[in-house]
Amino acid sequence: MSSQSYDVIVIGGGAVGENVADRTAQGGLRTVVVENDLVGGECSYWACMPSKALLRSGAALAAARRVPGAAEAVTGTIDVRAALNQRDSITSHWKDDGQAKWLESAGIALVRGHARLTAVREVTVTGDDGTVTVLTATHAVVVSTGSAAVLPDIDGLKDVEPWTSRDATSAKQIPPRLAVIGGGVVAAEMAAAYASLGSSVTVIARSALLGGQEPFAGELVTAALRENGVTVLVGPSTTKAHRDTDGTVILSLDDGTTVASDTVLVAIGRLPRTHDLGLDTVGLDADDWLAVDDTLLVQGDSPALAGDWLYATGDVNHRALLTHQGKYQARAAGDAIVARAAGSPVDDAPWGAHVATADHAAVPQVTFTDPEVASVGLTAAAAVKAGFRIRILDYDLGNLGGAAVLAVGYVGKARAVIDLDREVILGATFVGQDVAELLHSATVAIVGEVPINRLWHAVPSYPTLSEVWLRLLEAYGRPGFTDEAR
Image 1 (cartoon, rainbow, N blue to C red):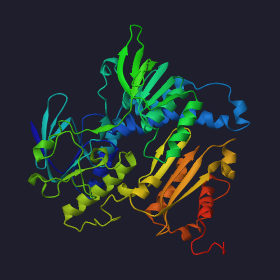
Image 2 (cartoon, rainbow, N blue to C red):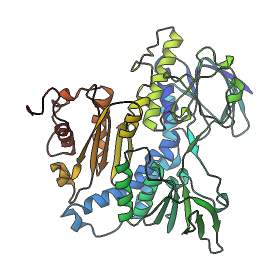
Image 3 (cartoon, rainbow, N blue to C red):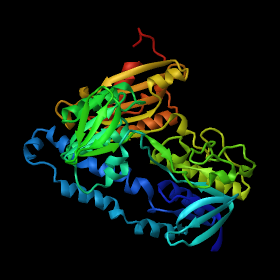
Image 4 (cartoon, rainbow, N blue to C red):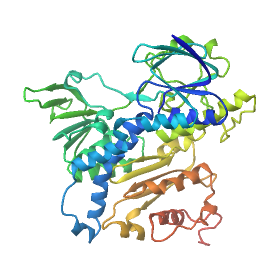
């Protein structure tokens, strides 16, 4: 057993943990990252990057087929092996040498093994070879362990060896038939990806796809999946699974029907990676999400949490399960740790330097289906529930000159949710080909609370999809003008 002391211990070396460590190291604090898997984490190897690589070939091919001239040049189908090779390249073939070297170059130590909290500001790490290292922190411990896929308690499901998102994004072969249980982002994206790569895909969703988004988003994605040959079953639940003697998986649904497949992907939600983390040592519930304040300090009644030393960033705090939001939290937490270590003031007012205010009402997200779904802020339903007096502005993206250039028969829709009392945007949703790059402009407008009358002066270039901003403003009408003056 060996002992080491640092200013900051970060448990979890994914994208979020790396960002915390980078901020504290840049702030002059001696920092160590503990990682039990690959440095770079879920996003680099099993989530954001490989999933988008799997989707890209199909999206590019579909886009080409919507443009006369290019469509005639497209005579083949996707080269599956080449697509998988590209995915493998993007994941660095599941090797983390480059990420580990980055930590070293940033002056951040790395200890590999399973971490457990064993006392206040103390983490005990057990390596794969049984080596035990006790780490102590003079200032802070940060939990950045992320989340894992939920496997539901369905009779026989474990026996058919279902895929989780990790299996789907790292698969070496494309199954002839794939059944997807779930209707969220992972389910929709993987259904789109595997259909484009040649699988016969069936989606089984208890409710409409992409719940929590504006309803039209799920409707347009569902229609597109069906047009591309995906069977989308909305309403039934899976009650039983078994594998026949020929290897076929049979899923029994509560409406009396069955679905046959070669492989089953379960994508119904996430749970925190806090198992055997030692949370009980400091008075917290084991296996639970970690509640935090806006500076990402873990909240709880235990005396062991006194002293502003335990933080949780990323998925594990259940605020916004998105890599970019986790990295945003990491920057806030890292800077807050540095400030507290120096005895400097912490700017914890809304939108301050040391808080993750955007987690509450300005979270951007892109679902990389075809069409893409890009959204930020509140949906109309969420805004009403929050008590805002709103106006909804909708626009058919197919009417834009920029859309006509992109594709024949462009299908898409935009929505802006306006706070009528302050005349600012509360939320925006775009659905269509290539809408992801529209999203940051909406994010800036929402975070900056840019008044509608000022947005009139943000002139969109023509012909691009950004022209939708002008059309939405025209639908609203210029503030300060009467109906007659307009």
